[in-house]
Image 1 (cartoon, rainbow, N blue to C red):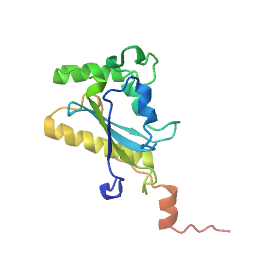
Image 2: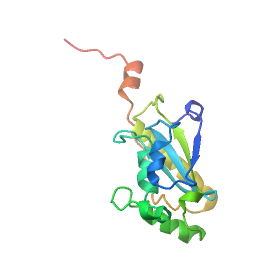
Image 3: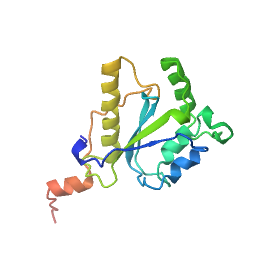
Image 4: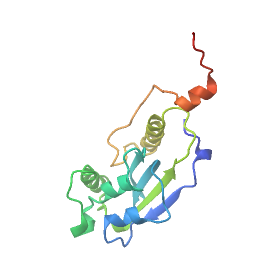
Length: 174
């Protein structure tokens, strides 16, 4: 279970006036690879997402790949398959709220977990945290955020090797 008191302060950035989605990866004050992100457009929730940092060569790469598919980026819009499901999010947002998802109206909140003392495996803890946020949204508004088509439910847990070693003494029979 994520302890909110141990999370670094939430960082917020907006995409207003960004000419290209590549500018997201060049935000100098944000250096994180393990995070939960929340994307808003005109103060309406678009989606929650997470990055475990495993395959992210540059900071905020996951957000860059998704937001890069927004139509509003014009000639700089991504054409590749990485993050392409965000085009469906763009359509779902329009259908749900009647508002076009434009990068100039997008704000992203980051909860950063670099160095966080995970008790169970970090991927699973972050997925559970993301799911709890989606479930809370559903309870309040009666529908899932447009970009979250599923709610992850992991009723299993695996203790991290570090936590295991700190809790238990291992004896070997010789």
